[in-house]
Image 1 (cartoon, rainbow, N blue to C red):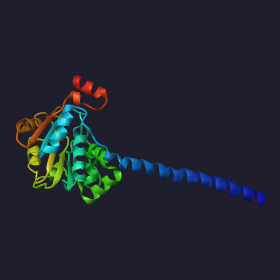
Image 2 (tube, rainbow, N blue to C red; image 1 turned 135 degrees about the horizontal axis):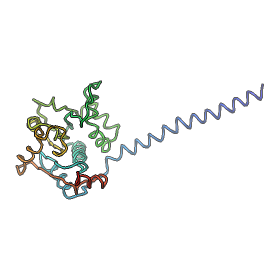
Image 3 (spheres, rainbow, N blue to C red; image 1 turned 180 degrees about the vertical axis):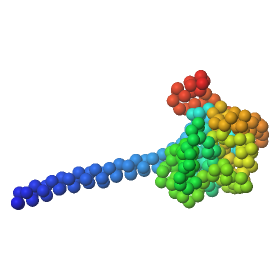
Image 4 (cartoon, rainbow, N blue to C red; image 1 turned 180 degrees about the horizontal axis):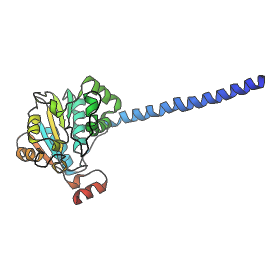
Length: 246
């Protein structure tokens, strides 16, 4: 009996050690990973092409900037970077994100949850960029306290956005009338950036208003229209090559 009790105690000690190693040590690794991820936003983002440099300078010096160009040219990421930097430096009080809820050839159907839950699939690229610049913990906090606001295009009418950085992403999926309404939401001490690629619209080409808006606002005072191209693609080199072929 004594030998059996000793053997059982030894086994329990070993198993307890294994559980401790699996659970507690495993918890420590993600914690370090989260800490490292939360610190990434402090790194300096530098342009990798002349047009990206022009875009960063335009956002810095103009209340309204339109970034027009193909996929992978850094339009959204550079706009998010500028928004987070302006928030960190106290130049704005909040970031307002808006993106048309248009599926890329698929119908997602009814989505459960609150407004943020419903828009989450459409705003995922923005969340990814924000998470990279701020870290998951700070991003959740900013969303919860309203420092970062999700504003559907349909709910923007009648608003005046003061002291804010407003980003309208995937603007090629907005009609001319929607973009006109969104542009006139710009308030005092605010910056607005529209990003999109007229060639990637999920609307009928004649319904997308981004190309017309960019043409009409080009060369206007306090408005910058930055056009990026195949040479500005910073994703996999194949992306730039395919854009030239497709």
